[in-house]
Picture (cartoon, helix red, strand yellow):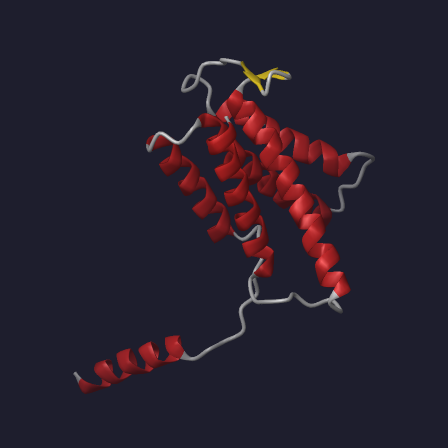
Length: 170
């Protein structure tokens, strides 16, 4: 009985020892969390444009995974990255087939588009821009992040602010 308790105690203590953490915005846990968050938001009645925003960012993240996979395989061709991102974000149509009717609306009196499609496009653009911003900030800081999990925090904060803006303005 005692040796088993000792192993349990040693395991619990080992879990409390601080270790280095390496954050990647395309980690499986982050991707699953975003996907679950989109599903929960949709069931809570969050506007479809906001659901589309997070879904667009998630699908862009999956596009980055596809790019990494192609890199590992050595599959390179002209326009590959843009094509993989475009295909992954276009999957938004397949994700909601039968669930949401295509119902375009006027946005700011300028653009006539479906809110979930608009949200997905904005989410894609914001995620790509934030990734570029992070790389620039890291380069300016000598190749190091300014704080732990900066690569994860930046997109989440920007998407949260964009979600708030879409709730207020649309």
